[in-house]
Amino acid sequence: MISPELVEAVRVRLARAGVEPSAAQVAVALRAERSVYGDAEILAVARALCADLIGAGPLEPLLAEPEVTDVLVNGPREVWVDDGHGLRRTTVTFPDDGAVRRLAQRLAAAAGRRLDDASPYVDARLAGGVRLHAVLPPVASGGTCVSLRLPPRRTFSLPDLVDGPALEVLSAVVSARLAFLVTGGTGTGKTTLLSALLSLADPGERILLVEDSAELRPAHPHVVRLESRPANLEGAGGVGLRDLVRQALRMRPDRVVVGEVRGSEVVDLLAALNTGHEGGCGTLHANAAGDVPARLEALGCAAGLSREAVHSQLAAALDVVIHLSRAGGRRRVSEVCLLGRGSGGFVEAVPALAFGVDGGMRVGSGYAALRERVGGW
Image (cartoon, rainbow, N blue to C red; front, top):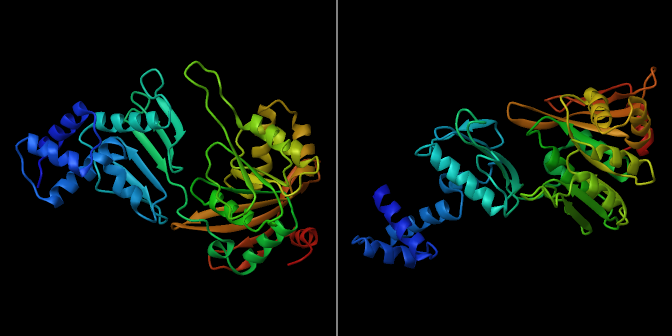
């Protein structure tokens, strides 16, 4: 067993020499420290130093687990993962909060972002598509917090995610080029399902993806990606989702897709879907399908539209809400609703289909209208 003090000495020696922590360089550094070890020990030290210097340090083994989607660090003593069965605390720890802080700052620097006392939080995308969010003390009072969200290891097809009646209904929604939103809470699989649905689009269609962080991975031959960019340290050069939606509309799209609708870009998306851009879609955080009109109303009003204007745009722009839920670690499609004007003139979510945990299906008042819009299934 190699002591942590020796590993630290090797780290310092390599840093001073300015060389990569390869097995050969580690062997040279160990000999310089008057320590002789076999090949297995040298490779172990090399892997540990690579993880700590250019990787995710103690988190590296967790990121390599095939089922893990999220790695969450709550200070030096708490590291949690989500492997599809809910959050699970791991045995991984850090020596102190300084080690967590250094890791967060190094990851932020690798993404070209700043993380220090003057800028105590960061949201960025790392190489390979990993989404990084970090917050430093004293904003995070319990210690440095790091959240890493991993991109899907593979693109799921729709039959991988749903079956039976839900598969037929969702396939029909895409084929009929209805505009839809995939909704649900955090970690319910909205992005994964949207990627699978977009994979069903006609290969002759041109899909424009607008995202904060490139997470959608549809298996489709004609996909163009636009990704937002934060402002630099001087506050210049930022490109937001609203700007990108406008640019996407000038790029001859067949489908405009907003990875996550959460701000003023909702105005341009609704306007686009009202001007002949059929089949547009996106994801939205919502607790229930019935909450979607209120969520969109709040976003639209915050962007400067009146309540009446939001509902007028919404009534003509969006057709369907596909709501996801998660129970017992299992993600599933729980409801499909139509959007339509209610008796008061404002848009409401009309239940069409509800799917139980056992796979059973219940028909709602919007069922007949949904079948008519998609031409049956």
